[in-house]
Length: 287
Length: 287
Image (tube, rainbow over all chains, first blue to last red; front, side, top):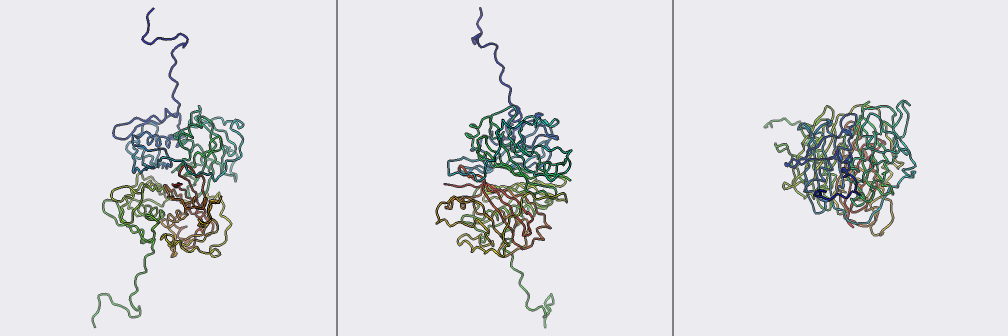
């Protein structure tokens, strides 16, 4: 009987294949180019009707900053400006720390395709410390995630299949109902599908899962797209790690629609009622 | 009798001195440097305890973009990141359009002193057009501005003398009261002092007039400073011009205080109840 270099215990059965990479992680693979930039490729799993889901683009920019060798601390604030369409295919991201202080660091980043800026971003990273704390807004009265049915994926939009969405109220509207004077607020339990432990990249993407408020408010199809999104992170890394694969609760509403743009604000809550992030965006719409 | 080169009509009386420049306009004077940058100087009138009032700095960045020869349309969204202290003295601002589309334009800008980035910003400018419109939040029930007493200026902080502030609720707290479990919401009528017609620069500065919510929430002195501020402009230039020198109503509240940072959100309303801007910021605090 010959021996292989590494003895195999027959009780292990056949050698296990490495577990497949989660689609989110696969979409966020970035290759350092040596000049300080990184390159990546859009993921068909997170495709929107045109180009990628805005949340995966925002997560890509955060990931480029997080992976930078000069990075200090964790994300505190992020603003992503969607300057032009992102085409399916390769892209480059240049992330640069503009200023590093003792406990905070300020970043700029741009995502380019064919040399043209498609997305620009700024971020503040920082080192958190224990202080007095208080949450001024209340976790809404909602049924537990398991008691709310999951929405079947929206057929033609790939990225929606990467999220489990359990709408408590304000679900995706039935446009055949025609115009109604509806409330523009949505409350839903959501998480990555398949489930994946929560981190800054996935939380960033989750902040953009809310469909445009004008769909709900007018109950009619309207071309719309995020122009700029800001996220304030209230969770730190240990809090995200402790959350694991539990669903998060999202609540989104609109403030003002007018002259082609509206703003929406949202909160993302942990399953246990802690506030993970607050997020705001201004959205283009056409009528 | 000798004639001066320009005849003087005695009926005009003595030649009138030009009206003095409003302190806001004087603070926003920017000199093009020929290399695409502009230079300015901090204004003692808008001094904060250390360095300038954050609102005047944000207005300076907007003004640098507005004055750029390539500028398209009006501000829609602005994010200003306060990366380090701004010292009293000269500064330079480099504003660059990153991408110009048919009806929107994406900007980045940095304010530098001694070659170091003190403030970074991004903005979206755009051309507005008439569409369906709706305001989803309500103008609060408040007395008219004239029925609310104006606050005497806070003695040692120069910039507060440049604003008329009429607190409806949540006024500057009396720290001698000690800690209280107070609400962190402020409602006030405010305008430039002396009154000045509203425009994008003054509206930008007004979005930062709200003192840090932690002062109100804890009723104790706490070192605090804005790290990043975002403004979504709902008003266009004709709406601001029509508003003139009337006071605006500001409402600010906090969401979450924790681990050294909190976020606050605010609305700025026209005197007639139209929403002019919604604004959000994340603020550093020390305990």
